Each structure stands twice: as structure tokens, then as C-alpha cells.
Image (cartoon, rainbow, N blue to C red; front, side, top):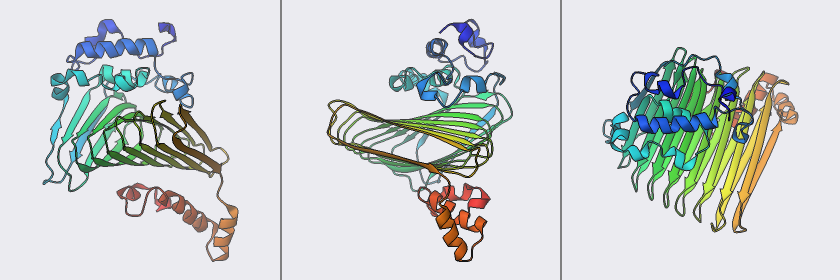
Length: 384
């Protein structure tokens, strides 16, 4: 790609690399490697198949390349003991700094984060957690931020982790990685109500008999991108992603889930529920990837979108890349308005139109976010 075609902030220049931010002088060689990749790949735009519904290059064109104020606060039960480290972890384990490139080499947004990561949290969890760990990520003001979160889960551990993404007026480019040991089970609850242009790339690496269940509530107040890459590294592992998307008016929510079945006897389950109002757009790409020698795989994809306004839109692109017959895979997509017969029935039982629609929409939300989930507290008031 010619540099004239690469829309990047002015002083993303390799000659000035160490001077871009004063506090990014460490891990310089690794950052430079990622930056050279970025120059060759470019910032994502719609011409990249993975980003066909999202023109990030244009969206961040006018955002100042300076650090906005961002914080990552970790709240935990006093009795739960685990290690929390920051950038020093990667200084001692330099081989892990570019680990995301082992799974995703051709992604500009990942290389941009690895070039300029400025906020680190590394959690090492070796024992069962009694209560959820809450990771609260907040941004303020304009500019850019590049948070990096790494979570290492030992063998035979049960844990729940909650992510809260909030605030901001600029561009947030986040990488989250979770390495899950043998016989471990991790539940993830994620909230996105960011007001920034928000992009998060999420990697999970599953060992033998491990499991990750990710429950997501996305209420973006701007443009949002959440892309997930699950790698089944050993047998009998399972990954589940269930998401509810309710963008604010005239906002955009973009999702991609790639389940890479690298081992036999693994299951993946992906589902999306979208409630789309005035001027909103949601996109959902789900890819099941099963290699030739991998046996007894099972994968499900399901997408349902409710359009509440004539200017709302939903893009759904299910994909299956399967190279053998020893699999059970299925997918389904439904896009439309609320069932008017159901609305009429509720009207006949004494409910007005607004009340009837609210009950039906609550039913759709509760398919993926139960009344017992802490995410229910963050729903817009009209859906509670």
C-alpha cells in the first residue's frame, strides 16, 4: 500500500517514533516491528473484508493524535488473591508482547495498539474467585488511547470477570487477551456504553476442557467495533458469545466473531440480539473455521434484529469455513419489525401500544441477559 493511500495521524512517522509520546520509550524494538506492520497494512477501511461494514480510517481522520485521559480500575473481593502487573510484566516477558500477532497478523488496528500501547493491566489468577472481578475502563476528553489487558488463568480455576467500558470523546483502541488453562471456566460480563469511537479486539486461547462464556451488552453512544477471536488449542473446549446491542439514535455497532476450531471435540455458540432505533446500524459477522483433521466439532450461529425505525439497518454475514464432514454446524438470521399480531394480542389484554412493545422487547433482551445478570442494571430505562 502506498503511503499516500494510508490515512494516519501526521506524526505516525517511524523516524519520530520514540518522540511521539515521552512515556513510550520502553519495548521500542517490538513497537517498531508492529509499527512497520501497520505502515504496510494500514488503518482498517471498508475495502478490508473483515471491516466491510466499518470505515475506521475515515472515522478517526480528524482525531488529534494525543493521549486522552484513560484509567483502568480493578475492583475485587478482599479475600480473592491474584497478581496485578502493568508494563513491567511485558518488560520481563518480551516474547508475549507481540503474542496477538501469532493469531492475527494482518490486522492494522492490532498493530496500531501494539505500536502505542500506553496503559497496561496484567492479571494472573491461580485460584478460584469467590466474587467477580470488575475492570472499569473510563476515558475523558478528546484524543486517543491504547489500553492493553492480559489475563492469565491457571488450570482448574473458576472465575467471573466484568468489563465496564465507558466515556471518552476521542478514539479508544483496546486489546484484551485471556489465556485459559486446563479444566478452567471463565464467565465474562461486558458492558459497552462508550461515547468515544471504540474498537476492542478480544482474544481467548482455550486449553483442554476449558470454557469461556461471554455475555455482552452494547449501548454505544458513538461508533463501536467489537471483534472476538477464540482459538481452541486443545480438545473439549467451549466458547459462547451472547450479545444484546441497543445503540443510541444515529449510532453504529459492529461485531465480528471468529471461532477457530484447532482441536477436535470443541463447541462454539454465537448469538446476537439487536434492537435498532432511529438512524442506527448494527453489523454482525460470524465465522466458523474448522480445519481438515479436526473431528467432532459443533458450532451454532444465531442472529435476530428488531428494526424500530425505517432508517435503522442490520447487516448479517454468517460464514462457515469447514474442511471435513465430521461436524455439526448451523446458522440462522431473522431481521424485521415486531410481530404485530403479538402487539395486537397484548393490546386486547388491556396494554397500550408502548407497554405491549416494551414487554416484547424485554422478552428478546432476556433471551441473552437474564434478570439475575448484573448487566440488566445498565439497560436504558425504557427497557427495564
